Length: 346
Image (cartoon, rainbow, N blue to C red):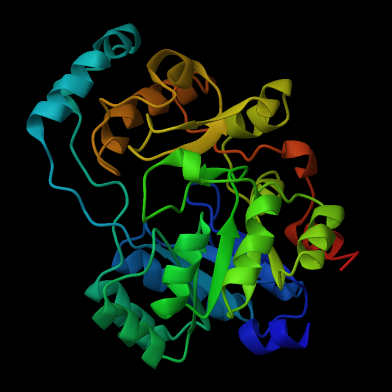
């Protein structure tokens, strides 16, 4: 626990996973104030929105918090691929009365850049985390000069070693069970990825930096198991999605509480990169892994109007219902209460 406090300045070995689309600063504030590490997803925030959310975090807690960014390489749009994908979606557009010519293209999620680095230099959060590796060395150096500790996700032992060699202060060992996007960045071969409790001890053995366990951990027993295998903390996402502070949509909440939440799959149809979500119509009929999708994150724009129209009618047919393989820990309680419960056996 002393090592954890030295690294992150937190009292409890619980990190709330950053979850774009289902949370803002209130969830992170509640977790941090309870003694864990609250996290803010920033890949979909423009600079002004990022400043606003960081200001809210500063006002809401005096404890450390984590801000998370994506470190992917922005793709070059391919008109032919985009046109072909929208033709594939044509029957759905017609079914829901959507004119595809009115759908704008857009990146959906932006990689960490110099503008984001400037915001961090202004506001200096204590912890900065990345998905898909690390940003370019010059950008990472700017983050490090603020005094922030840097975390990043690894889905293989090789990625963990790479992160340690390139400046990460801690590695998040993300198992295949985790909800949302895979953090893989050295290879797109999903067969290289393994479950959390197979990956975790191998990463702990392979690197000298602290290791955080992520994927399928939803209760105090899972946290205790992760710590017993050498993790300094557990990162938990799915369990927080029904908390009062979460902004999870009504259709997503209903899916998490239903029997369908036990059937998840890795799919690329919503964003262009594999992410684990509850199997719904879009995944069944388009995927789960469709090679025709535009590159990440360009696929997001084509599905968004279908999602909006369906959700307005109370349907999650075209929604990315992100969820890990173990939804049993989801509870409609305050995030502070859940945080303390998760740490109760630590």
